[in-house]
Image 1 (tube, rainbow, N blue to C red):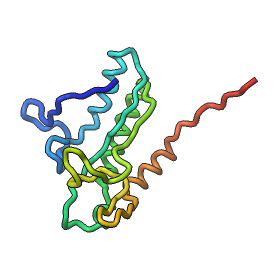
Image 2: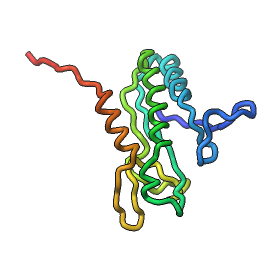
Image 3: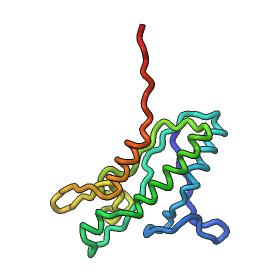
Length: 155
């Protein structure tokens, strides 16, 4: 299933979630739990794969590479969203995959190079790639929450 929806960052004039540097892109982790639970109930618990969930930072020309590598807001974002998603899973939602947007800082069709979503910083002049704090956090998160496949015995 592919889905698109109109975005709103307000309800009855009140902001929904925490505003970010990007207009209309508020942080609202409860939303992922609500939509996954809705899909579970509405479509008889179909398997769900979440793609392109991420947090964008404005590419500020005067910020240092060091500052860009310490992306604590992105870490906080993923911690909250993955916690909300795990609540849906505990309630029985059949979530089979979760993909962060994005592995690398990249060209965004709507924003060009002005927004950075990557777990890895890319120096656009040299193309050098460097781990951000969020990449290390996500690696640790995965290793601590990994679901091991049951062993299948063949007779």
